[in-house]
Length: 80
Image 1 (cartoon, rainbow, N blue to C red):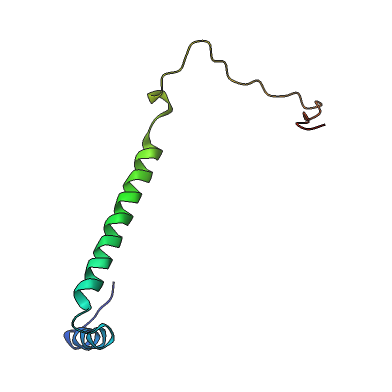
Image 2 (tube, rainbow, N blue to C red):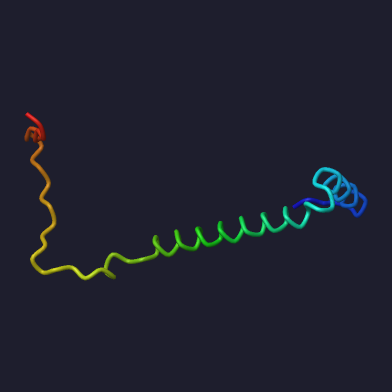
């Protein structure tokens, strides 16, 4: 993706060291790692919820799907 030479990587490391300082680099790395773990967990949870089939839930025999309203029917009012 990025074609970075060794010199460019060293320059980037020096800039990061100047911006964050030597004492805050471990904290920044820990925060980035924690954020990536949370993102991966949320992504896997979303994939699991999408991949669950509707047939996983047992349906009762007396449930019937709702019938569509006729086209000329007026909408029901909830409040009069």
